[in-house]
Image 1 (cartoon, rainbow over the protein chains, first blue to last red):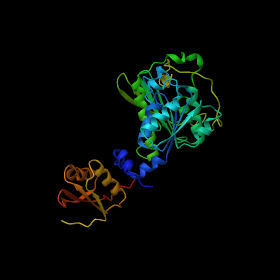
Image 2 (cartoon, each protein chain N blue to C red):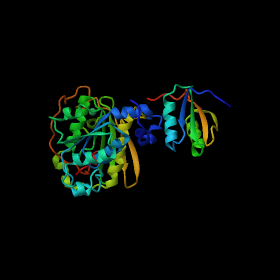
Image 3 (cartoon, rainbow over the protein chains, first blue to last red):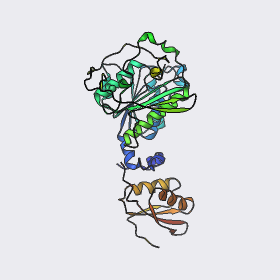
Image 4 (tube, rainbow over the protein chains, first blue to last red):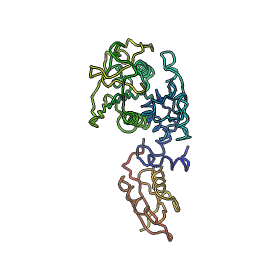
Length: 280
Length: 85
Ligand SMILES: [Zn+2]
């Protein structure tokens, strides 16, 4: 397969990177990436992946577009209110780049359907709006051996980590247990500044492109935290835990299981402060 | 100086930055040490293409006027740059 004239023009500015080139571009065209959540993080991530020419993008979301989403969920517009998010997203992504096949998966990810939904994809981006889904996605990616890019945002802050199952720390290695429902305030109360979603979502797309191209060094074994009030990043080394319930040497979790639905907002435990979520 | 090239690319009438992009793609397809000749319109490309490729370690063997209104640039692909990925 060789690049068409319009592909050379569309992708020219990335094609001239030594790490991309015609071969890399063809790799992207053949790649399949699943984005969990067509919200604050999924929006910029999916837009950049579509723009870059990732051939197949899957989007999982169960919600419809609401007015309160629009300050950060840049895939959707005022006209899309009431539409299923995956449909709104698919239309936007296809108009950005008609070469991309978008699979709109308008459903809630569950222990029953996760393995089937994730299986066709080369890499998974987790921009879910709730912690049970995050643990579920993490466990599914470990069990299916899929590279996972985790992103989370709350307030002015965000965090990012790439997970190469059983080779680098997984989400559970870093955050072994979800907080109990009593520890955390209502789902509806977590504030977030829109551009934080852009910062972290764009970095998630960057990590995915690096994985697909085999370029650079993945953000694995390192938790990158963004501190928006100071406009600073910090890197926290994280290690795979041999006792981890899912990726450890004797894992307790061998099949996917549902978790109690909980939401998360900024809490007192600093290790958990950042484990938050996008679409609330 | 005249230098034999392994591959020739006529980029007359192809504007910036597309002429640079096409030159880069043509180089990607070569083996290290092979030479590429491109013919470009006079103008920015005559300085810009050699400068950009030189920065990446390719060797510019010639930049000289060709037929009126055009320049000929001959580039040897840097053998040290691994083909990617
Ligand atoms: Zn783990």
